[in-house]
Image 1: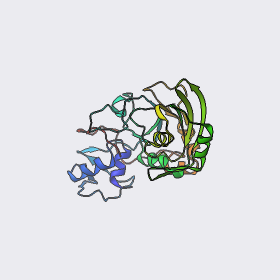
Image 2 (image 1 turned 60 degrees about the vertical axis):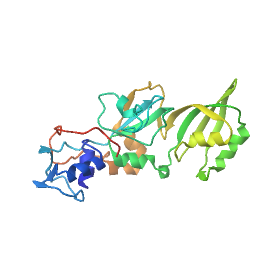
Image 3 (image 1 turned 90 degrees about the vertical axis):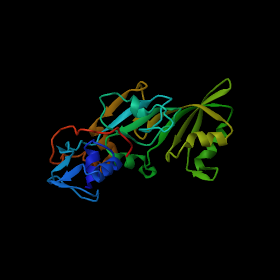
Length: 264
């Protein structure tokens, strides 16, 4: 395992941040200060950051989080808008999101302490559906929605098969159910705008087998390790979910001077 990944798995920082710490001469392996992140480490190596032992690698974990509207899914926003990570419950460790939800989108956001797991679960090849409840202003027919099963191209971007149905009609608004697999940037909004309706509320209600259910806005709930392992199938072993947890030679200690969290 690369040293930057080991530091990220220990919950100290992102990989990019780890590379900066290494460049600053803050990281040593077996008593030798590193000058490059291109170093492989294993369970027998003694890793120190700022002279303190690296905390033991945390096991991969997953949380369901109900993202409220009005938050951006980033650790630092150049426009100064409030972020998801500023609003998380204080007992959560350093986490990254699996994909993103727009500023005005609400609902289920999966969080994990393992960057590799995040990348695996957000890939379209994983095949997990993202389901949304959508309120739109305007009118669209079920026939028009049915045509989305063959995909659609909007402004030169090709979107794959989409499941969509009308749930209810209320005055000038309609409620729709939408299911997608790719999760491209602003996919649901752009597709519906191309059908001449405007989205005025967008709620993600599920991501693969994980559902929002009655999770309150701003609340996070851990997914049981066994449940996550079952859903990952053969990949569970890759993320250390099928056997005893083995960490690096380290103590459970906090490294001084830890910087604010940022995305992997």
